Length: 225
Image (cartoon, rainbow, N blue to C red; front, side, top):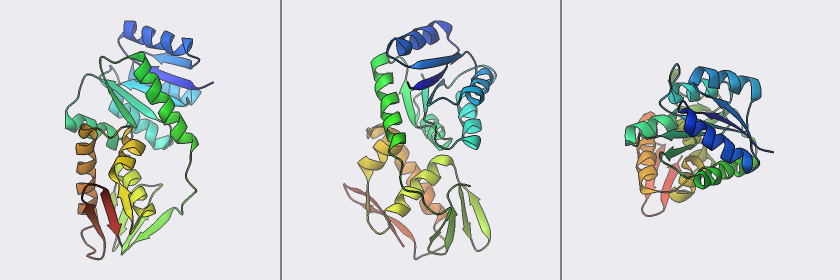
């Protein structure tokens, strides 16, 4: 039976969502603020975390950052009324897997939870911890990129995207596939967020002219090494 940690400071909404998930077969732990939510996460280690962004004591973004320090894999879904591109990008780079704008339907939330659970069950074969990308050393578990002794700390989402580009190196990484894999859907709004991350990775890799991320018009991206 899937387990969900729900963190929502609006009590009436939290009770509605909790009861609706439980009726559909989920085990739900509920917390009313970020600090309590993190404590519940450490205690229960749920299959999925569903967290509001604007919460007292510890906001959803900071909560996700703390969780990612000890768990790189648990899916995190943000619930929020905020929808500006900068907010969405920040949520994803701190390790969020999906972003659901209020007001939302319970059915949509459940579909997104199930999609993330299914994705986590389809684990990729293990990769070496350190990967060579041209003159760079990419330490995926530590989310660091090294060049000539200098290290660049990467966000969780940047490291995930670079890993997928590396896995498909010298081949096309389809835009829609990476959006569905990392963002949960291939909407125009999420596509703009992906463009921001690709620009950042190009900047990180600019010191080796033998390494490029090129656009394949209408299809996706290619990491050329």
